[in-house]
Length: 114
Image: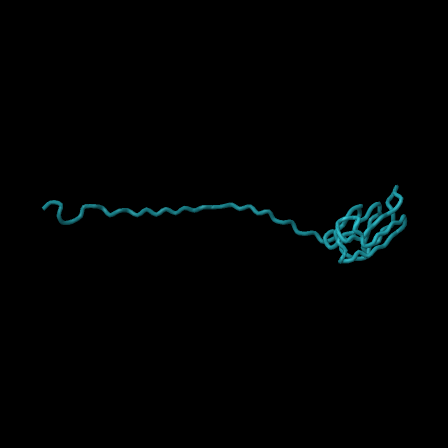
């Protein structure tokens, strides 16, 4: 009998594929925070504990060509929200407390922590 008996078919082949997926993720590193400063060289508002350290600071007084040096310890970042303030042509000293939110200075020589 023809066709009876053994099989003449070849076994099916198994094909295996490996797929490798590579992803590139770019992360932006946060720059290291800078330590609060102990000198305020220009007019402006300085956040306590972030921009400046708490402590006692001295200024030589008013800047050139100005009438007076004005400063204020602040409860908020609003220069009208003063805890205390002062104005003078001469040297000044102020203690900025850790509980102060900010310190504002206008027309003053540099403030240096003592």
